[in-house]
Length: 219
Image (tube, rainbow, N blue to C red):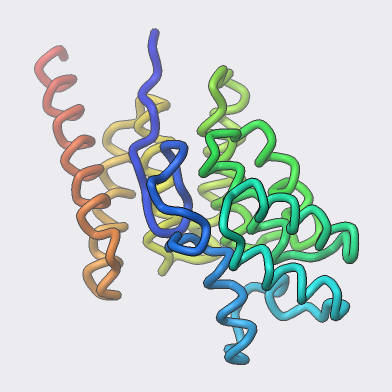
């Protein structure tokens, strides 16, 4: 049976391959992560607050401002050679690889980020996204992604993005009622937070509702 593809999702976890924006014009996380660091915001993510060598910080900054995805990927790779536990570089590299429609390659930095910083909600949601984007998604892969996404929502119940990813994965797994519940939670959270992805979350909720209506007619 043909599985549903994930729907496009912005601004954090791109779920549908390449975007039309360049590196410096992206609303993706690599540039945002560095902005948070530069303005000394204290983030919940431990890998954002972890100290890094000056060379690694410089390369992170250059990667976020790179003119092309290829240049940014090269700079993040250099940043990781300067500091193997460079969380922002691992996260940024994974996001770029997802944007370039290379989820298999994105798994490597996301798995390393989760190994270095277990139970980080952003890292978990990113990993679940990459697994769900695999072109040859096996049942075992889908079950792993579901478990990872469920863990993320338990750790960060206020995160609309995590709820949305969980809804997409549940829908792929045929859990339409549970998918609608997660989609509704994402919408409620997005409305409370003035989240710019609200329209995407509402679209996912409608998709789940339609699936429930179809399958209720077949019962």
